[in-house]
Image 1 (cartoon, one colour):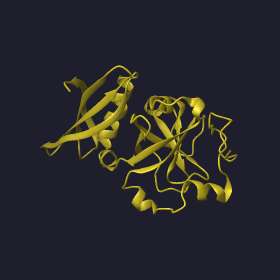
Image 2 (cartoon, rainbow, N blue to C red):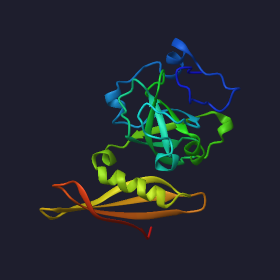
Image 3 (tube, one colour):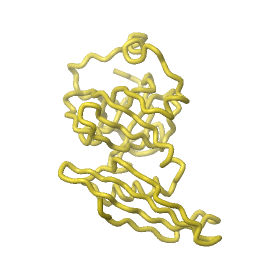
Length: 217
């Protein structure tokens, strides 16, 4: 256990987890530079946690309908950034927001909220699953896309956003720009596509109007 992280929970007391130098040899015998990891999908392990009232990022675990995660304290992943996490065993995916940092975690380890862990189709009794993690630079570069992602997730609490795409960006006038995004949402029964539109003033960085609507697959 990582005693310095009071809200950390593996979920399965019967699983033995490496400590000290042993964990570095077991999880990542040949460390890869973080700058490379940020650009390439990497395979690693995901644990789960119930979170806590305080995070290193000052962002609550309840953000984005609990589709949140913690990463290693020494990684180059930043608070508020997004990662796409895929369960290798069943290909189920979820986009999570980084809200906390874990001392001792490597770049290929992640601690997701229990709800995100279950969304990945994993039983918390397992404690740890093998995953593929992909940094989401496209979404990070478009702050309004991230804003619409959170609104879409909140508007469809029984679904989880697994994909996103910037459809177009239009300069309407000197005081108005418009961005259109599409999100793929999945539940245990179905898949939906939602389109989000946002118009804003680039001079003041204030929203003029926004909306989300379901569109055909």
